[in-house]
Length: 114
Length: 111
Image (cartoon, rainbow over all chains, first blue to last red):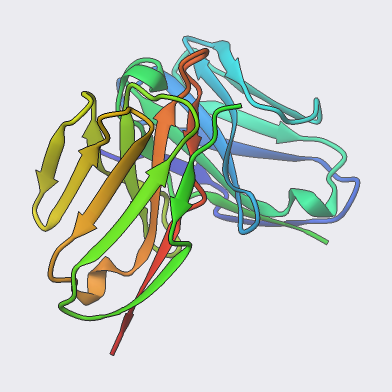
């Protein structure tokens, strides 16, 4: 079965713009988690959605938001982009909540903010 | 808060050598996860550990869940070129089940 897909794979934006990233989980998986990966900070948890509800949230400013649709697909939005938002954004899906089940990661969206 | 400290940060080894890396925390974990990330890809789960003292193998990989529940080890035997990548430990925090990751051990294999 198909793995986790993320679109777009690469994105270049300028400061102040906003961006929307998309994640399609593995079929049947109901949980989608988002992570930001940077060389300095490593993998940092952004949020987790399960059955269209945000179940957990990391320590990121309100500029970072997300949502999940009824088909479990998820989007992540970053508004008023800053240079420091440049990172690899990874999405992971699991059958149920991530803390109780194996997560499968997508290839990520590489965001560059100029 | 709960953090995971991985060491070493990077390793340079010869093909065929065995590799050891570890992950420690000041707080206990009930689950330890080891992931590997190849360039341009997302992390892939290698081994999951659920019980203190557990020793689990996956091919040439062996991981142990420390008896104190505050550490875990990953060993790779007879390394090969495709072992190159970043290895992360991770686990769900006790208080809210958020999965947190160590900063990774980058493995390089010298020709």
